[in-house]
Image (cartoon, rainbow, N blue to C red; front, side, top):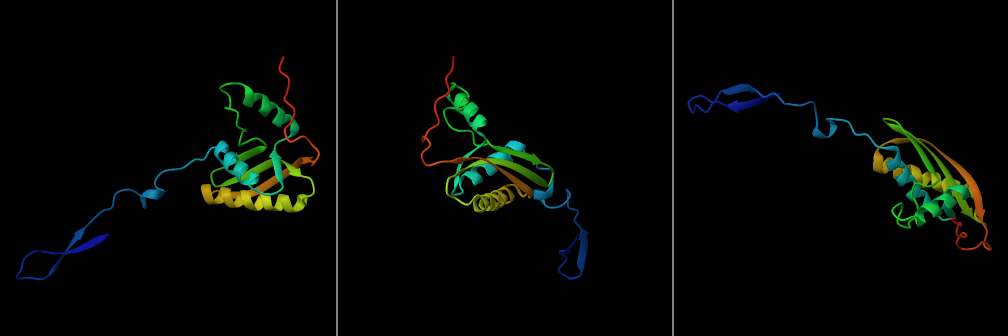
Length: 158
């Protein structure tokens, strides 16, 4: 880049050319590399999927049971459900793919819920990470029936 300055000599108004060299390689935001861990994408996707009406829970019955046991053990979760339960992400440099396992409420259209989950997850992940979501695979592992107990029975620890 060349910057034009005046010489400062009042008798001549001839411009003097000075050369200004920029340091670095472009805009500051583009210097360096950002990596996003699989777990970050899994959390974003898990929260986005749970926001969809008709999604009762995430994960298979077995993973929810193990999660319930883990949540009751002091120092391993503080009693709150794991946000990433039922979510698996594979993250590359510019793209990501997701596998979700969900439990739907009885009476809802599974196709509609799956479509809404895909839309919500893709929008949230792409907005927050800048990664392109190439696919969101959804496995419906169970249906929550109205007569089912509201809380799953407590697993017995021996």
